[in-house]
Image 1 (cartoon, rainbow over the protein chains, first blue to last red):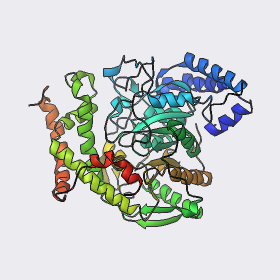
Image 2 (cartoon, rainbow over the protein chains, first blue to last red):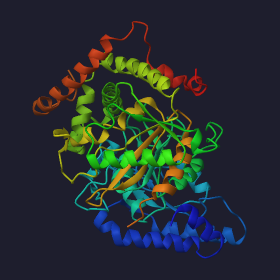
Image 3 (cartoon, each protein chain N blue to C red):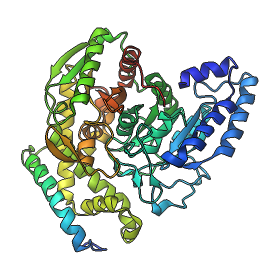
Image 4 (cartoon, chains in turn yellow, purple):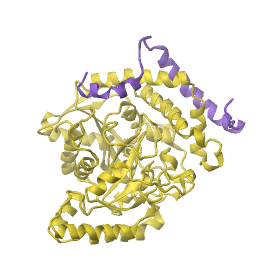
Length: 446
Length: 53
């Protein structure tokens, strides 16, 4: 069931907020011991909240499309009185005294909070194999990673534990779990969603957004996260007005043949919907990724400088990245920001000819837990760098990007297509994604 | 000297990775026009970009 379907059922009184909440809590009770999607479950307060929202509906008080919808927050988003660990030993006992604005907005919109989802330690990685709170497992194959850093969010949505989960994305952390778990993930334009009250990682790269089962639900969630939609540009009247660029360089090399074919089928589906699909040459994405890595190394280490004396409190992979960041000279960080501006300009030039860039989200399906390398086009690549290769650069640009399921591999694992647009063109991405979903069909929950 | 120090074994592992990354970045930086300013200026002035300027 989607958010929109649940909303209809609530308003036709065929289901209550409490029943929806109990269904999700049942899924959590059944699946979480194996998949470890949640760090904290707030069952009691969720049921009380749902009952209060049922009373409101009975009294014709309707808060909108999220009224009575059970959701989960990534556990680096501050929730008043509820432990917020950031997946880190540093914050194991941290209990915020206030909700983050995004929590306030979603609660005011009637969402029922089920609890806090697990993540890669400090959101600094893509496996969600967390040394402090346990390994989060992919629901399609528990021997595999769910992606990260918003791994628990992807699992929760894919398994009906929640209708919507909040995520953060600094180098792909919403889109990667969306791709590996077979759900929709939206990284909005940089700064569109308020990130105060959220543990930072890359100060100029961090984005906040939703993971949902369908593109339409992602649209509902995004609007609920905003202070109004004035900054968003209107959606095109139809797909016939959308110019899609299909990269002829970078994005389809070092990609598995199954993923390549699946995304090309999405392009064909878009053409059938009337969109104009044209091959385009994209700017230097390797340079964009290098810029993103240097900026993130430096910014993350700046954030965690006060904790460097507590080396034993970090997992090995996160500590290695933080140590690298300490060694980045200021000159390199500043030059990375200068190169960034030039590359942003080059992308604006590209987007004067197209409205949307269509690429794979991840070059492979979900790797195995503990897998250090993946083979792509006969070349062995570091799993983290391969997995972030197609998504990291978009955080450097700050452009919005949507990941949606585009099929399953021969092994039955989900694959994701990524659509990128100009800043504040989220409605275009959502309209195109929704139309494509109606043609290609969304991956159903387990 | 960084405080606390990074253990030598850690440095042995991470330094080559970082050196490779920074070497590539410096090639790009070597091609920057002298007047190129920082993207942080862009981020602060993002409203201008919203208007396509």
